[in-house]
Length: 108
Image (cartoon, rainbow, N blue to C red; front, top):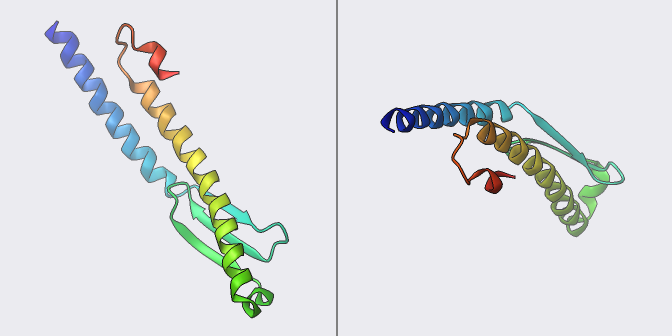
């Protein structure tokens, strides 16, 4: 019994390490998003850190329009980044979970 418990603990620690490594790697995965007309472009990491924002000069004339563009485009980019982030971390976590009877239905 204790051997099984120690084995599971080791597997959990290994999985935690893989999760941390995946989080680090996701800092290098870039997500690009642009407004439908291409006047605003944003880039962020899969960990949802904004790396760049490019604004066409025409948007600088209307503050309210620029704010709307920023909200819409950033939200789309964050949604994409979140999906990538969650999929990558879920794959690592599922791969490293110990086989506990009755728990397999919860991980689908």
